[in-house]
Image (tube, rainbow, N blue to C red; front, top):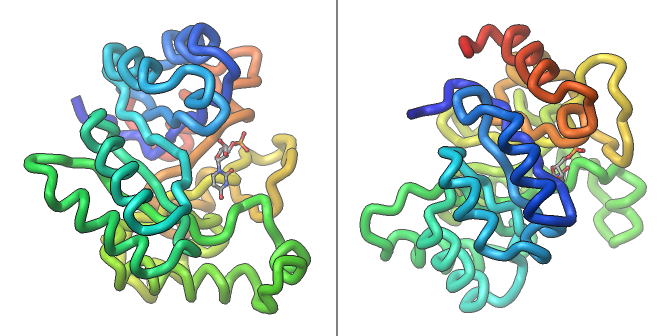
Amino acid sequence: MTCQSPIVVALDYPTIEQATAMAKRLDPALCRVKVGKELFTKAGPAILEELHKLDFDVFLDLKFHDIPNTVANAVSVAAKEGVWMVNVHASGGRRMMEASANALAQIHDHNTLLIAVTVLTSMDETDLSEIGIDLSPRDHVMRLAKLAQSSGMDGVVCSAQESQMLSETLGKDFVLVTPGIRPAGADQGDQKRIMTPSEAMQAGSHYLVMGRPITQAADPIAVLTQVNNELGVAG
Ligand SMILES: O=c1ccn([C@@H]2O[C@H](COP(=O)(O)O)[C@@H](O)[C@H]2O)c(=O)[nH]1
């Protein structure tokens, strides 16, 4: 079954039981799911198996950033676990990304998307300046996204605020995965570069990552359904 929705629900939980309980309240026809550092650190690959058993496409969001050999091997292991999407940090550089893409290419019949993180959606210009990057988030995202594309990545993680610019410059097939999605009126939390689901899709995002607005809602499936309806996605 191919999920028609662009929504990827971030299962940011401290235990496999909590994450699985939330997944069971969702529906693989209505969303994909994301496993990040908190959950994977506790649960390990067992959570991938649980979510695959429930028929979900899984984005393994571990944002690998290390020497080329280490990252390439980690990406290869992730693909062999059957994840739908895996990511690395674009700031790890060309050789790291190329080694990862080459490692994936050697796996027969894999269909894992390899994505590079540009500038975290929790960061603004001040945060960049403090780590020695004197560029606006937009300019730094553009620079890293061009590097990611020419290094063989399928797409990038960015803010939806940069989606239109990236789609126009890098083409509509370059996959744009955008966290920092907030329905109108939702709590921004620690996110700095946000957009609503409809704005994000209009800007050219392919996938919308949503965590707390769904998982902390009293009725997560109702919020998910409402967003899908707004986007015109059939359930
Ligand atoms: O730039 C990035 C990269 C990854 N994330 C992850 O997405 C979710 C967002 O959760 P919310 O609760 O909707 O804020 C979370 O798992 C992050 O680790 C990101 O936010 N920004």
